[in-house]
Image (cartoon, rainbow, N blue to C red; front, side, top):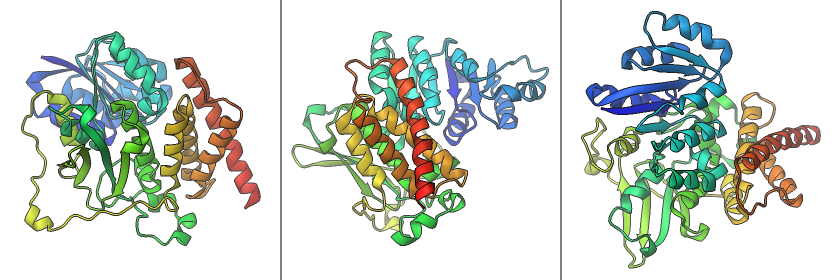
Length: 392
């Protein structure tokens, strides 16, 4: 019986992971489940899976979670430190699905226990890829990609020599504003940005899809995970979200991973690796689909892609600054304090300022430097937002 923990259990990836585990419960022992404010769902999940521990990252919700789990024998903890401590519990396989930089420390703790880390938290690689991979190597642990694009690249590389790869193409749906007139984007609201044409995802990642900051993170993640050079990594807009990535080889061949927009495929591949097992996902009818559409991304519409490429060239602590500024800019947009297009302007301002101050260089990445850079980037993002509002 495999011991598994799920960090970010109440989000869309966590729910999909639990769906797969619950279909084959005799194979798994659930160690820890962590979540945020949706303690009703977290308690329901913990009872259904007979978890050893349930943790909410909000201390003020501990009492409510404990009440909901009263009599179950399931331990209850709360707070960011408790989430990290939960990762110290021995497990064979850990899903890292916490959104944002908050997922970094639990992921590192899981790797230190030698667990296989199924990584849906792309921010860990963007902010501290060097540290994450170094930790995995030191403890003999594996990191498996769960983002649909990176799972697709991983699967296309099975049995291949990575030195034969000429190019990697990751796809993007284009999000909610793919076909909007450019002049309308500054007026876009959080409610409008929270609708996705294909995928069912949480609020923050859906807005990131609309701004393409999500794809910018994935560009950086591709470099950090597989070691490809920035010039080898391309993005194309694919409105149907059926081709998740393509890998091009030196002989001109392209291998494409094609499947429905359902995260259970990538999760199931990581859960069952190195085997393939039956998954409850749609089987595509290619005749019914008829045609696949691809477009070049417009960097005027989506400046996040240009910024991500600059981050890949700068390297060092630029990923931590990019992500910290992006997360804070998203907070400000959702709170109605800046406009949709202001998010990219905030991130660009932060990167320019920190690079001018020589604050992004590092010879060997240290965790404390990543945390400090993240904190400073968020502070700078607030300053940039105030300037934008003052000038508007």
